[in-house]
Image (cartoon, rainbow, N blue to C red; front, side, top):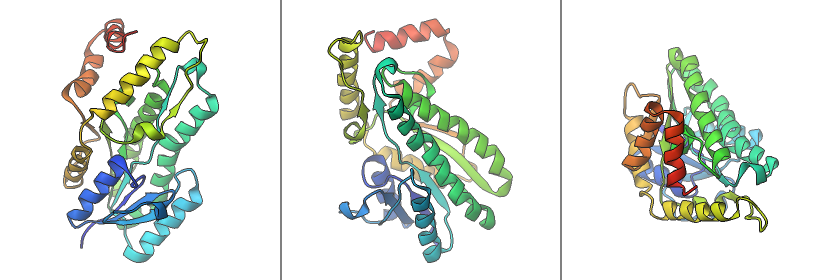
Length: 267
């Protein structure tokens, strides 16, 4: 029997690449999208799910269980980006990002755990971000939302390990996707003290995405995790320096590390 995989946010980017890759290798993949009817050219079944609406989460899971009677793997990939100086970013927009990146992922986990407990097996992979390991200028809220999911993953992992369920996270660096198109950008204000540096960093972020790695590398990493008997809790997928930045934060004095980041972002 091929494993049944549920992956949120599978209509584009990293999510679509993972879903396509797994489907090609014989997995029974159910991808989700808020508007699946608008998506074409996929080799897996795409079903409606909005992580902000618990009723749609329950409906999607019930649909899969009615057909397959199991969910072996959940890949929590749905998320959104946000940029802006903290001072000038709408707090409502901040809450929206946390509702999607953190609470939405938690609600999907809560919805699949009863089934995984009953079958005494399961794997949950939360897609976080290397940005979640550090506070980045003009991306502080995004970093915080992904960092929070990393910590929640650690807690849930311990809570369900003895029930036969593994919970891990995989943190991507910069990948060549359309994430910038769906990101909330706080406006660059004409009279802002941050105007020049914020605009420079917006341009830098877009350049990093455009020159980022192929999303297929994330798909390969997820495939490897699924086929690991005793997976780790934390995985990072990205360029060497992006992954090494996490090591540097661990070993360098705070002020030295901050200076390195400020130099990188030309602050």
